Length: 540
Image (cartoon, rainbow, N blue to C red; front, side):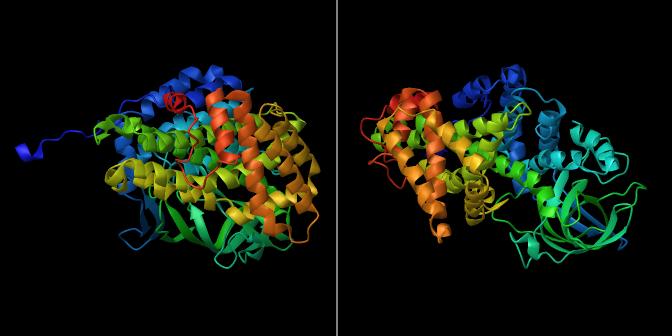
């Protein structure tokens, strides 16, 4: 019909090489010693940009996981059925080593390559990244177990690139989850009431309820429970060595704001077999390495989302006209998309620097640096994710608000990274503890910031202001009142330092001016008139 002629609509953003077009990521991979991974990352970049992968991503979030508590005969089976689209996505991510490649093949840049691969997949479909991340994070905990049979039995499966989503014995591969929080405690895991009764040889029977257990079809879980010696960490398998099912009752799946392709559940243990990992009473200390690694992946996940939001917004404004001009050429829109690109690049620079600090060859200074920098960046980058996604969505107008475009899904997805593994206050208080108890962490962090000293008067002034704030907070009895302000200041200092040292001048100058200078605003699109908008947008 002539009244339905379609014009001035944006062409599908399909068959785009998501790696090659992400210039800051490409540069960081080279800078941080992961150039050897280039063929793989190029392959992944092309794959996740295909129309088929995008279709699977949309379908996996539309056809959500379904709980089957019983079979048709009434037997308890506690299985979650995922759509085939989700199975294809997670199988591809595992095949590329997005879960444990850095552990399987440690070398300089191994975590950088793994982070880049993880981010490319999560940019298009983030839900599958939850079990991928937890599996990666479980490795150091299990590898360090004093019980050799645990490590010997599980490590080859964790490092495998095979994928089998069924609950069967004899599998060559495994994915892992965790179950820490309970309804009465949330982040206060020491308030847990799940009990663990020792039955000998490091085995325990667990009984209790877990309020959040993500990816319940994983093969194994790290669980916190109260043993006679206090809160302890346990490995709970879904399928036991004799092929029988462990008691793992999935009571319901959570109806979540986002992260719809990934199942999150409430579960109950009743005399569920678990194996002690670490020492009795040292559960938090044992599992903290897993928590640290999943916090790092929250940064990667949010950064991937920022890249998706920026790329989709830029694609739209380069192909859509209004009021006689292409949108990207209209000054108000130019300012907004350039600002979105700045945020995305700052997050990418931070994420990749942190990835390199987590490699096996990291020295003591990098290890101290990452202790503080991971928490600081998890707080700040993840906090900015939802607002960034919203602004990008608005660039698409009404189309952005519909579920047939990916930014509505991204907007609902971004908050999970801020909530998961410690919401804002939990992370901010953790930073305060690190500043008090681990002075070497701030010394290493401050040394990193100082590498950009002298590059910008505005940065130098902000750095001195941040150092004063650290000293003031350390001397006050009400330090928690200033925790968020302090963490935000530390985070933006790190981003500015990295961009001043490694990004083009147009990027660094605009970031410092808009985030540290007198012209800084509260919403996107308030960059100064003198900003080199063309250079920023061309790079993005």
